[in-house]
Every structure is written in structure tokens, then in C-alpha cells.
Image (cartoon, rainbow over all chains, first blue to last red; front, top):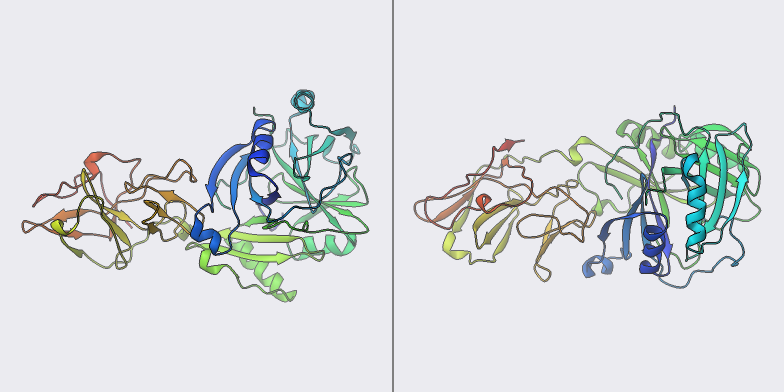
Length: 155
Length: 269
């Protein structure tokens, strides 16, 4: 038994909030959770301008980067630019998800097979428009009834 | 499109897999599942939380924990209150500063601290106690607010004692609790924006107490019973809270002598 329940949220820096929202919501199916920290007084206190979203059971904030962030090479699709978030897809939906990336002209690497001794099945790797690496995969343990993350609306 | 079934794992580069695996196990408190169970760019270790979420540490010669020119990059562990207490003990023992540098932005019952792993990845550690969402009762007794004629339509007056706003709408008076219904942060009145604002998590509400569509969705702000005496003087009972689902004109107390709250059953904390 771990001493950590879940990863409640992440902050992800992007160059353009609208462009990022189109990508995460329009292609991956994220939903707007709430606009926060657009209040002038708040930003003057040092809080960055951001908006939060949910993607599946995960809450994340897209944070406006204060300056241009170095981008990974365009042809590098698998990597870790500080971190990489990986989202699970049911195995039965995996091919449809890849087709959807293709329809939206999102280049990806894969599918890559994982060792059969591990919990992951196959992954594909790609980037958001700001160069943050992402991964979609199906998992061999998708039928296991894990504890659900508490719905605390935090972040 | 519901393409995503849920969050699976986060991948982090580390320069020394043995060191980081030990840190994530012994200091953060994750369970080690095993080595090289995943195809990736280097030797790796997979660790587990209590949900199906995983952490994959991948050894790399160089690590850029936070992208240059980025801001607010972080990932947040959610712990129970007991787990949080144990995490603080482990962190203190490991020499970490366990004070909360943003304590002024925390709601009541919200526990948080920031920790950097051995490679500089920034993690927030969070836990929420039941007091974060419990109805707050300061037991201050009835508050005399003055004469109804001193509050023109549109008035919003905050009260420190009792923690409420006296609001006069076209429909009448409301005594709106200043405690945010997301978590117990104290709202302020943003006169220039015509809304209530919570500096803890950014929730915003209109003068009726409804959360704004552009804000995070929160239950409608609670009310306190309000009465207007025969002499036209207003009294509010902040020791009693009334929960509600949206605004209805019946919730407002008409601006005439002898009127009082007639909405819903009060819930005393």
C-alpha cells in the first residue's frame, strides 16, 4: 500500500492558451474546468494566468509561459520535456484514437509494444503544440478495479 | 469525444535511477512495482500510487526538470490527512523545509507544501481535512446591521464579525456567507468587477451567490437568516447557515418593516 493516493493535478506551460485549448479539448476530448487567475489583482500578486481542464479523471492547468520556451526538434515525437503525461485508452478504442490523431494531422510515433511482464500494452507518442510530450496507451490491467481518485475539485 | 479512459502515468527523467527510486519510495511513499517493465528511452522503474496511476522514472544522462521560460510547472500528489502527516515526518527527517510558502492562499483545512526531487522536479503535496468543506460557525450571536434605508439597491457590505455580506437586490436583502462553497476560503467583494472572489482557488460568484459560468462550478453561497424589525433595523444570524441550490427571489427578504427570511430549513453548524 502506497502512502500517496493519486496525482491530483499538474501545471503545464504553453505558448498560447487558445491554441492549447483547441488541441486538448478539440482532439483529446478535455473539458474546460474553470478559468482562474484572470483577475488583475491576482496576477499582480504573482499568480500566473492559467485555465484548468479535465481530461478523463485528470485535472490539469494550462499555464501561459512568460516567454518562448525552447522547443524539441519537430521530428522528435517521443521524449520527456521535463515530464510526459500518459493517458489510458481502452484497448478496444485504441485504433480509433490513432485514427483520430491522424485525422487532425497530429504526428505520432508508434504503436510501441511494452514487455508482456509489465502492466502496459502499447503506446503512441506525440506532442502538444507547445512541445509538451504526451502518450496514449492501452493497459493490460484495464479490467482491474482500482480505487478511484477522490473527486475533490482541487488545484 | 470520450477517447480518454483516464490518467495512466507520468514519466520523469532522472539522472540516477537507484537514487530516485529510493527517494520516491522512501520519501514520497510510492510503491515500487519493478524495473524495466516499460519500453522507453532508458532503464526505468515503475512505481504505484493507491489508484491505478503510476510514475515511470527513466534514467537519462541529462535532465531538464523544468523547461526554461516556463512557469508554474508542477505536479501535485494528493494524500489523506494521515498520509500527509507521515509525509511531513519523512520529509523533515530527510532535511526538507516543510513550511508552506503559499500559506496565505490556503483555505481552512487545506494542507500543502512544495518539494523538489533530487533532479529538480517540482511536486506539490496536498491533503484536505473535513474542515475544508464543513460549515463554519463562529458563534458570534445576532449581528445588528443598521437601518434598511441605509442600504440602497445594489449595496454589498462585508461584515468581519460573522463573516457575511449584506446584499440588497431589487428583490430585497440577502445575508450571504463569505465562506466559499468550494473550500473554506474567505471571499472578498470585487466592487470593480461586481462579483465575489476567492483568492484561494479563484472561484467567483455574483451578488446572488451563484458561481459565475467562467469560474469553477461551486454550490451557491450559503445564506444566513435575516430579519427587519418593526423599526426597519436589520438583524442577521450568522450562526445559522442555509444551504441552497441556486437563487430564487423568495430567498430575498423584502425591504419592509417586519419582514424576515422565509426560505428553506436552516442548518446550524
